[in-house]
Length: 334
Image (cartoon, rainbow, N blue to C red; front, side):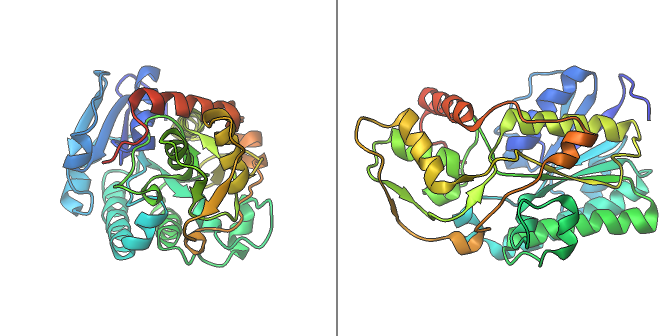
């Protein structure tokens, strides 16, 4: 569809880490943005742009979901129960049930509302057991389903997209974020396992911990700086709004082609934030079974079709994240 000053983009989970920054990025581009989230989530956010409005409520409720997306030309679907390793271990039933209930309410509401396009924020966790590296989007069909409950719930969300697309003609795009990090991330409680690995390790170093305790020493990750992830999302959203046949019905992995081991990540953080002592680490616990041991993606599809490449390298992103954490406190909890 052609964009106008009245084009509404609804962002579910719009008060969350990624959703709120997508809202702040899309409003200045001339869209009316509706942030949809729980009461306790929206109470923590202030949206200064007058083009952003907030609808607070429970997306598990079909009636609320229907009213919240009213008038939207596109839904950026970020709402989900999500957290780092300890959260995923301790709240598996809530994650599975709530994410399924949100999807079961939202997709029928979208069909009833005239079938606005849905850009679904999935996760790299759907590739938890990838059989090949670096994996491409088309490798998902050959990948065993995740044993991680959050990853399974996101894979289920992808099936919601495809099923409602096939049966009802609901337009959709699937995007899979790969290990987003950066300033302004908040944790879901105390303990390093309740915030993602980059701010968790920076917080440990800034607090004086030595040696650094890692929750798991294994694995590789492609780390995506928050500003890059938001820009990729906005580019996909605008192509979906335009009805681009190269984008609708497709899936895109969002992240860099370079992967970094957790130990190398910790060493980079120590180099930037630590003192003159040599880098040393211990493994305090091993939550590696909750996630993918190895995660390495091929970014060719999003580069070719969307024209997106990350701009912020990992060292720069660590420096900018650490600067924000020094200014605002090494830890913030929800």
